[in-house]
Image (tube, rainbow, N blue to C red; front, top):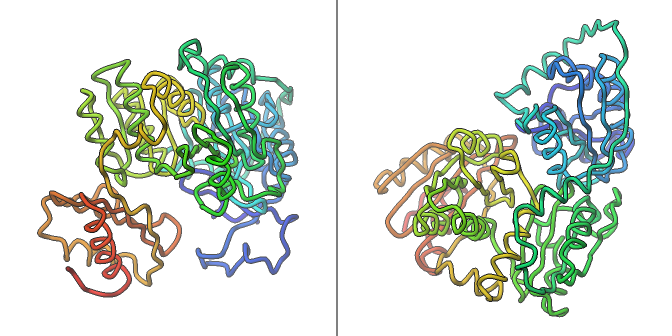
Length: 471
């Protein structure tokens, strides 16, 4: 029997039994969210396809897939499930997730990307959208899909759907190129690490359209074994080589994507990692320079740099809770031109309010060309902001930690509960929020000086981890 735990807040995620042994850490102990991952077999994926046919209610569905070893079999199984219910399936081959979002938006059809994003090769999953790239998630169809699949009762007896293949790369790259003026991009040298995920196939085609860019490729060939490092650049060990090579090779900046390339990360010319909220501030500036007065949505963890620069450039900043479904919902409601998260997810109104890992790259190239500055100078130009980065703590009782934080800092200038607890003082602020799946709380803190940031970071961590010391 399929485990309903595969239906998560934002996607479907599971281990691939053929790639792990029964004693694998991925199985863990049933009921232990720290270690347990539910399995999915191809027959289960086929069943999910049948459920999606009912949920979507569409005569046509597109399917893309990442580079994982299990993705071809999953694609075939999902296609079979959909086709058995009379749905015509368009298989897109190896794609980035943002390519699938593009297809859903441009063709106005439901679509599925088979991917486990930045996770290790033993896992796989699905990201699903309705026509217009409207996400299926918790509160927006995931529970319905789970119930349909778990209850079964698929009784369709009509004409079987067709399964066809279609190449979309040229059309997709045409779409990306509309975001910049290629003739005004100066010659730069960049080094890019795709981690043997899908990002390299798009970057290579994109840079072919901008011949003045000198591109050094790192691990661009899709390989589901991920033989060089995990396709998760959020972990520093996975971008260590990129950090070393960026200054050594004289690159103007470095860039890296996760496995399905819907998240993107940047290094300056010295190899220093640039936090996602500072990239949000830069890309917001790029759009506001062209469209003053537009709305920008950013996540609650973000540096004050985002708010400050949006206001300075005449835009309207709106803070939202963490998570793509929340950011996208608010962007649609407010008609926001751009949204960004600390995690490296960036969203664009002209990309159907969906994530994209390549538009930020194009925006940075255009900004460097216009400003005639180095990447480090662009970041320095934002001003002095001192952030902790996200710090995770495993705790025995998440709820009691949240209550203790709210009680300890009751004298703050402002406290809100949009996502966990956000505490705001004149010269420092922080957010503590619980993990969606684990007994973990996540701290993001910022202050007006490095010394204060470190002192307040340690103070809040002491409270989170069982102390009660306040400085």
